[in-house]
Image (cartoon, rainbow, N blue to C red; front, side, top):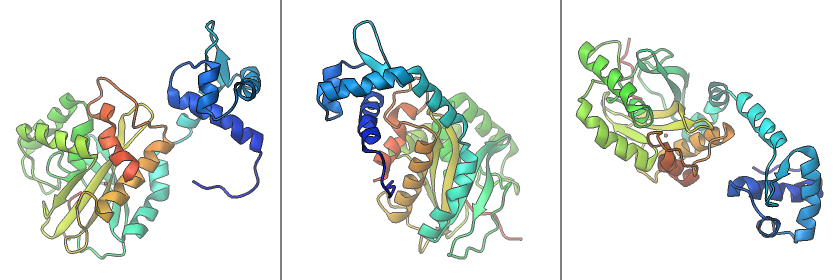
Length: 288
């Protein structure tokens, strides 16, 4: 993001030190930190002295520097002041306008993936998509994204419930076998998104991708839907790319680091396809 206007150069130079410390992720010696910040050791030391006084940086007994308690407090305030639903809702219109497609926010409800917000696109769809629409965990793109990044015991419970209920007018997407989860999850985690083509609604395509918080936990899914003749699902196509880029921006604003290792979190340690490397997702309701 480019911010126009005159700033304070010394603050921006000092910011390079904090950026280097945050990127490295562990305590650093002065010479290494200075090199990473493109400063001389003497220059870096002067900034570090001020940062130590402010609590932005601290020094251990071995002389190594690391992020200090005040910086941690700032990070915590940042994380708790950003609500994922609020951020996604505020910006979803941009994705819809950029792609010309219908865009929606899907969260995990008591009965499974549930639409809570919809932005109409320029492409007119003869479908009824509204807040409260319930999606199948495995029969829709949105559901498959949740299935890839939720605890698998939880996913199995949702799928078992769908299978017990069977096809329903209150749920979009037919329930599928629990055995299909593993293959789907592997693909979604490798690419960072899921798609559907003409299923469950003929002539409608969908692209879905996850939004993560600072802990690497999936918070919601962003989904684009559109007519098959316009919305393509190619991996490097404009709609997949736009959805992934949007989700990467929202995740980043929530403090998500796609490169962080998170053992024990399904798929999160791989950074959902590294969010595609930071983005190089009375008529019948449609798929999502």
